Image (cartoon, rainbow, N blue to C red):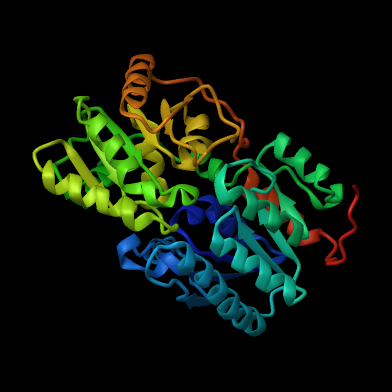
Length: 382
């Protein structure tokens, strides 16, 4: 049986790769190895490793490699520490293939460690344009990877233009769509339980709400506080309840987090509630039923296009990304945000667009990995 080692190092990437974990675990030719690390282990980011374990996945390794500070320097140093720790883990586990996801600095650490150990590397979500340093990292990982699982046909074509051999590329779609396609997306008692966590005003599951997630933009490092305050203050003029998730661990997140804390303390009476994290299935339900999603999370483009949820993408973090009709891009300015949210609330639900797959990515990826020729000698086809 081929040993497939999946590295999960952020809460968002767990939601994206969970269907692949399930498919590998159930495959009669594959053995799942799981490494959970970085912010997945930290309480202030929701300690998402507990969600992984509750879902029935037992990590083979838990690795701490995040430095405090949320600066450009600590991001770079955390990448370096990740390379060191993951190299040791790979040497011990001896996987046949390593899987890494998307475009984060933790993903880069996985890619470098596997590549330099001559372990075939599979990359999910390559070939996309996303703006800021994430796009640069994503394309760098493409050149390190040996097998590619892009989420769209346009992304597949970009990988070919980058010189990757076509037999190494499978347009699988995004695995996160698998979960959306198979689960009941109605708000239920379990959702109500999770909505009771967090801090802030009490949420009534039967009343409309706006879902807000705003991450830092690493190329606009010093502006995170002002940017998130602009969004928070604009949303107070809408009567809908607001569910606000904490930002990810990218450089600049401390400024965004400070903005959330300051606004929360200054506006305790407003209908806002703040959360660290949700399990993927709960998050899907909340995104599916939101009156509008506001911020710069990639899920507002990827999963929301399938769900038809009206979204307002604020600022430059997702610049250039493929998106559906449900997404409206605006500057990080109060007037622009207000106008867009007003339009999206008035419009309501959009038709589903299967831009990022049809809900069978996990099985496609597992079947491909079970039979593909193991070959680390890439031949560029420019």
